[in-house]
Image (tube, rainbow, N blue to C red):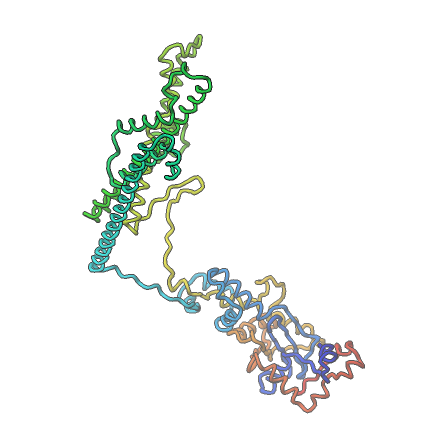
Length: 590
């Protein structure tokens, strides 16, 4: 620092001093401490004990530990962060520093104080402090009145009526559009029938269709769409077969021709046409099935809506009952399929293979066992009789009747669940466990945040954190505490005078920010008394202002007329060097 001040900033002279010494000298003028005494200064990062003899510090008897107010604040911050991890952003360094200076104290006996909080009770509750974080209570929702329920029901009814009118208008517009398109296609087919054979390609090029079959296929699709829009039943099977036969004869002319009348190339073409016809008919049947299923769903939906409008409350109860029955039925079927006829409710042992098979699998196993027993002796003649093949069919048959019923039940359960979610806002469907998702036995209840969730309670932290001044090992620092430091400092004095030691302990002076903790004087006096002989005079006093008395003492020292004689000038620095500065010792004259 001297090199920086002299060579960089060009100051003329510098005087160095110790803050604890300045505070001791200042309080000595006010009669707080004597000429002989011990100055204990727990500072920000370190703690010093300096003995005074005849009003001057004896630095050879000094003692220091690397513990201070910084470590107390950091320890309190760690404890609060572990205790309240959801409020870690609130524990800033400045706020924790304020909590430390406002609420922390030194316990007279750390073990007894910890037992007091462990047992609880009135005394522990009185010593507990609570820091309330900002919190805004949630608005309370009052149940709606009957007038409000009736008003909302009327609004829903008007909205439903409006939606039905919009749907009807859209349906009428769609029907008109399809009818116009159907009339146009029929008129186009009539014109196409009047056109001569050689003019058909030019006529079709103007219409945008490639062939007459494409026009007829489009006409069929438009007719089906129109029937679907009008809600008419499907056409008669004979009419469909007649149209299909006419289309087939035009598109696949070789199908009905005998093979002996065809050439090899025509036979290949016939096979190709048969394959195309089969796939086309399969697609049409699948499409027709989808259309019929869609019409059936719309019919069921319309019937459900009519029932709901007649009696909404009864309809809702019936839907809940149906959902419950379907869910229980599916669960029962799954349990039976997994465990056979046993529920394993009271069976603590393992489940055998027979219990894991369903009825169809058990029947197949019985047939296999019977066949093996009957045919196991002599020559194997299985398959020689017709009943053997019947048995083979029974064994190879995968009885999926139950599975088909299960699929229908699951589809119906999904439909009922979707319907309940639309009409009941409070309905929550039951979750189905999957391979990647474990079975949920209980849905966790999330309670709304309350005032207590935003409270920081300071209990044992109030005395546990400043206790590191007397037991630094609590934070992993293997050094002595404040009370033991006084004994170390006295033992380091060159003079072993018992009278001097008594005078030192009778004037123990506390300064520094950490000396503001309540109870530190009494705890320090009790600790020194355990180290000193019985009957030794012990008195602990605190500075008038532990934080600013060091500055006040330094200001008096700088205002003294002989201050310039105690400074270290730039000429001395360049002449004697920094080694002489290390031996420099200021005379504190206030």
